[in-house]
Length: 613
Image (cartoon, rainbow, N blue to C red):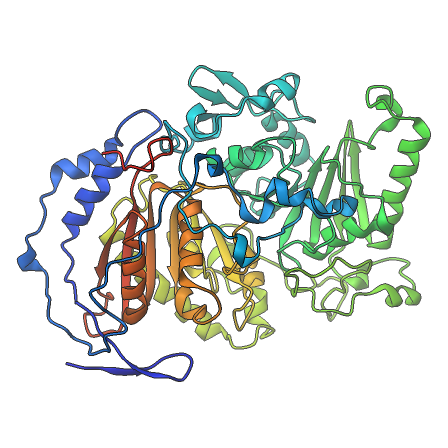
């Protein structure tokens, strides 16, 4: 039976598929057999499922062709085989490659920004895991322990020994929860902040940690239901972001340099710098203006360390009084220009609060309008930072939150986001938003039937490559996992602002390039319509190889796309040491959209990439 459908680019194409009525327990057997944990060979949850299931026979599969198609879509040629890269590429980050970085200017940290390889320098091989690699410990144990074999670098244990960042103990690293500005532990430090900022009642949900180290601040905020987006450059502090992700804490490689941060305006309830070495007073306040862009009206900015309380610390910091006093003056002047109110200065940290709207800014002069940004504050991908102030959305009175007041979390997750309620996001209404939520709840329920480990704690770091309104993440929400919601820069509508208004996190990214993370940092990747979106934009193998780079051994991928697309994907990943199962849409075999579930096989470097059984 042939079904003809129009593709998104106007072409009419025939669809061909071998329809699978899924033998689910076969998939569980494979999945269970491949799980390994930081405790040794084998995951107890997976082994239990393996023991309890028997594979369905091939009689349960329906091999009848339900969609006609051309031979160019499905042929008998063998899949292209991708070989392992050299072991020296174990921690390769294509767009933050250290050797390439050193060819760029050091001013404004340009050399630490994204510099992706040209096509002729791209790798078309599989990044190997280090020998002895194991699946990270389950959360919350992973917060405190990371297997040494996964990140075999001891430099931070020496460099930051007195600051309680990380300690090496036999076969694991232990993270006591300390930091440069909180050697007594992140919990005590967060308690101090909570005496000033409403951290514990759901008002503060999303946070930005600039220069995060190993992300202990973000790690300890999680138990207070605060989700931090942490970033730090790939620099002399070797593997700091890699440690964060191995711990199960959201983090990306990034820097405040010359390019805007890959986040929408009004995204974060709180921004934080704990001795992050960012020159806040320099460049006419450029970096504070960028924080102001991404800080929500009524949000908080925390600065901990120099120059705060410089009178008592200038000797320990080995800086002059005059230098520190001038630095603080510039910060205070910029904060006043931005209309931030200083609400506290205690010990070695200070807290400012962004006003809730422009009407509540006392003393702002009309001439300040000449310094207001004129560009789209959400159009940020590879755009230069500007020395200007991002305007507040208009309000009707001085008590109204510009852009809309948010519900406390978790109510925020399912409430109508202000960008939707106001109609400011073209193409979406309250009804279409609610329908999107219902659709993804249905999809996620189907995913849980395919892979019953989804909400077991097996998958901690989850990525949605084409997140839309964030409804996949909202439907799968659990304290056992977090989701990096990626909104492709080529999407027709940039929806990332809505995702943040739901109390979720994410970033803009172009999947024709490598993501700003280390290899092996995600347990589960969800790819909805990604390859249809990027049709004729870049090569399928570039995107799939990047997915392989960032996916952990024995990690899982859920593709959702048109059957023609998935057949091509299935064929290509056959040469990437992935095992796959094509599954019908939950509404039945005649729906041309299908689901392809994949598991990356376990193999490590040092043995020519041979798969370990």
